[in-house]
Amino acid sequence: MQIRTIANSTPPARDASAVSSAPSAESRRISDDVAQARHTAMSALTNDRFGAMLEQIADPGASGALATMRCDNVVDFRSAQSSYADNSE
Image 1 (tube, one colour):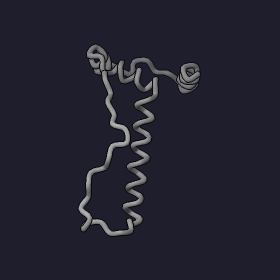
Image 2 (cartoon, helix red, strand yellow):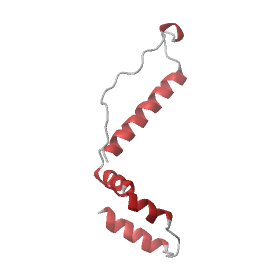
Image 3 (cartoon, helix red, strand yellow):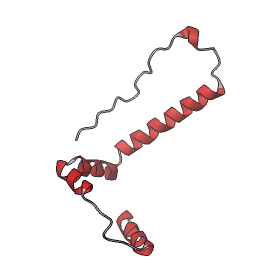
Image 4 (cartoon, helix red, strand yellow):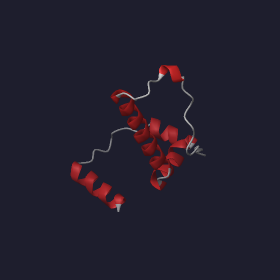
């Protein structure tokens, strides 16, 4: 799988007549939300664990395995928490 990004891309041009000289609180909030979403996406794309997960789920054989998964193995909360802690170290 190949991920391509365009760093520091220029936003599309806007019609000057449609935009007032001072941005509204709503447009600032939207702009901040977009910047935060972009930062989060770039962080995910550069995260090694996230990349490894994408490689695994992009494998054609993985889709069949995911489609047939069932909840046959019931795990209690402590066991799941312990496994998660072991894998996070």
